[in-house]
Length: 286
Image (cartoon, rainbow, N blue to C red; front, top):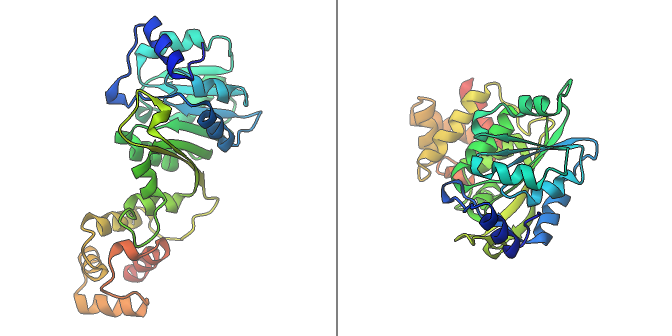
């Protein structure tokens, strides 16, 4: 059974007495064209491995398994275990972990599942629920040191924030933190009509590729992230007030530093790019 249409999904759910669970954002993709676009975007190594987060009923899992040596699918909903293990039993390269992805060391799970001597670059594919998009994204970027790329489907509003340009309302902490770690490329929009049950919002698929070298160099990465976070806690503040508060500097001295850095003191944080934030951290830290 490979449920990739509304009729097939309904049949699978009825046969196993299952129902979509809203708390985990279970809206099953029922568009085979979108499935193919997602798998194509993953740029999978035929001799490599893919880590899938949230396989649902396994339609994407099956497509991924046909293009690589193995797929490790991580699913939080244990009620799907019987269905997934039965429907994909013909694919020996598919392994499952039924747990909350945020509690796992993902690279250790890959090593354990496929008895690897060492971790090699791997791809991630995921359909991420809205309420845990940021935690999953930063787990991948900060903890998965051998991640080659992550192809992620998420709600359109979140994808718009990740890909926003300076000056817009969507531009903010999520945009800048993601840009610090990775390049982001759009893959495809996904209509709400491509899911069963149909959600209330549309989605987008994006591909995230970690930088080989960070686009900006900072001497204190932890403090840099704190500075970015502080800048967008009250985004109507000027960069003058933000820097004065964060670096505990009087406003005249702060103005002098900003002018020397060719950054107008009255600019808002959403108009500054990643390089300008990095520059400010370095000059104020001196």
